[in-house]
Amino acid sequence: MLKIEHTGKIRPRHHTSYAILFFMVVVAAVLLLGASLAAQAAPPAVNPQSGSVGLTGRVNGPPPTTGAVIVNPPSGTHTQVSPITVSGTCPKNTFVTIEKNDVFGGVVACQDDGTFSLLVDLFYGLNTLVARVSDALGQYGPDSLPVTVFYDVAAGTGSVSAGRQMFLESATSVVGTDPNQSLSRTVSIVGGVAPYAVSWDYGDGNTGLSSQATDGAVTGTHTYTRAGTFRVIVRVTDSVGNSALLQLVTVVNGPLSSYGTTGGNGPGALGGFLLAAWPLLVLAFLMVVFFWLGERRELHKLRRRHLVLQ
Image (cartoon, rainbow, N blue to C red; front, side, top):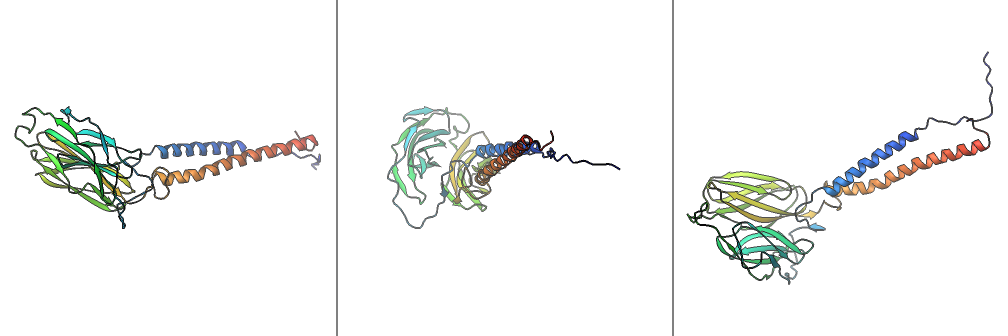
């Protein structure tokens, strides 16, 4: 018969998988860090405004009292390139409209740092540029000082000799909509030589391309999935290679879902989740460390009392 004798000492347990637990916590930390960096690097909407955005209002406030200032190009500039970049300063929370020879040339939202920049197509010859600011209710502030730009094009280039310069017109500059609702925008092609290729850049990473047999109205339809202020660029090229451009703005109403704001399914929602997950991960790591230290401490006490087999 097998006789078992008890020594009165405790044999420590060695099967607790602290190494595996520690490895799992490290892997979770690496994955969470990668997701955090991806959320921070996610491209925001073009010209996003802070807080909530919208074009609706019931009580009119005072119109803007400060106008925009065109810094570039300097007045008297001669160029053989069109479109050109027009930039300057502006009061915050406004839209900046550029008029060329009293004709709508494009619109952009003023940035949070009080600056604006947009592309503007030029007429052949002299262009007098003026910047006008307006609020979300369409109330205009004072005009900027005029800036003159000369678009020098050699005769016989493209459709110039036929007097058929092409440009785009739009009855609306800033349009509002709601997320997940179809929005149609219409511009008119004037001049050029048909047929035309029309491209839309809706400002949220989506584009559209279509053909147009004749000049006149052309419509682009798009559905935005998140709130924000988006730069819309329409480009048209005619059959002889001439091109025209018009920059517009679409405001999608509602709370922004990007860059740290809560709600929605965008980077903001992910950022909120990551912010809440980091304390849990730190707590899990500390639990593993404290349990391991606690076990080592208890084993050390038992060994000092000669109650644990080595």
